[in-house]
Image 1 (cartoon, rainbow, N blue to C red):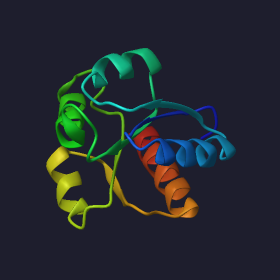
Image 2 (cartoon, rainbow, N blue to C red):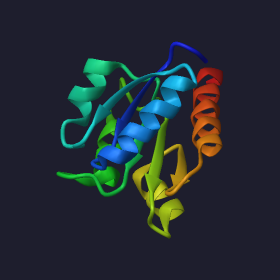
Image 3 (cartoon, rainbow, N blue to C red):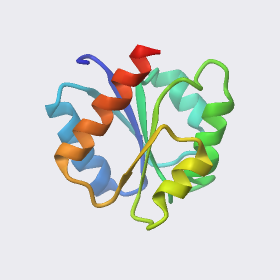
Length: 125
């Protein structure tokens, strides 16, 4: 699972910083974006193996950004982990078409395990 790239969409710089540190320590390359309106361009540029998508991200929001990605023939198989402090995160993730979700606040082990799981599932397909 090493040498995989994770693209994080979140407008909270603290979350971006913490997730970047955790995932880099776990051996991943990390790219970040504070907006989601240009998701296809960002994905084309970074070629991520998985995406962490915040629900409340500026411009179009996490649901619409995830839907745009999942409608794209070339990128629809990229696993998306939906992250949110919203109590209905499982419903939001389902509505967006995400592959997994992680409620905020999450701990390091949950983040690492969820990312490793969606990457393993994507490789198995």
